[in-house]
Length: 59
Picture 1 (cartoon, rainbow, N blue to C red):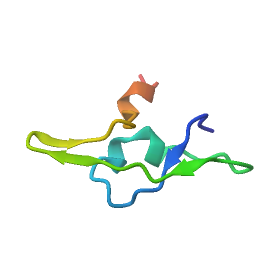
Picture 2: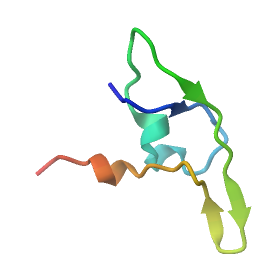
Picture 3: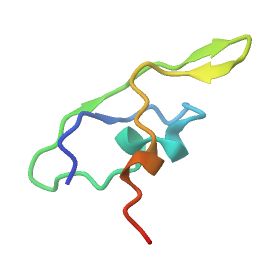
């Protein structure tokens, strides 16, 4: 159960690698936001992005 505001932006190209999108929500109460990504000349960015790898506890 994440203790973060989760993202509902289904158009974000970063969503599959972002903890805000992929975390299992709290079944009793969970906050959501529709965070906006930015397309720049070097790629896509989001100031609210939380990398899933940060939470990889396997191995």
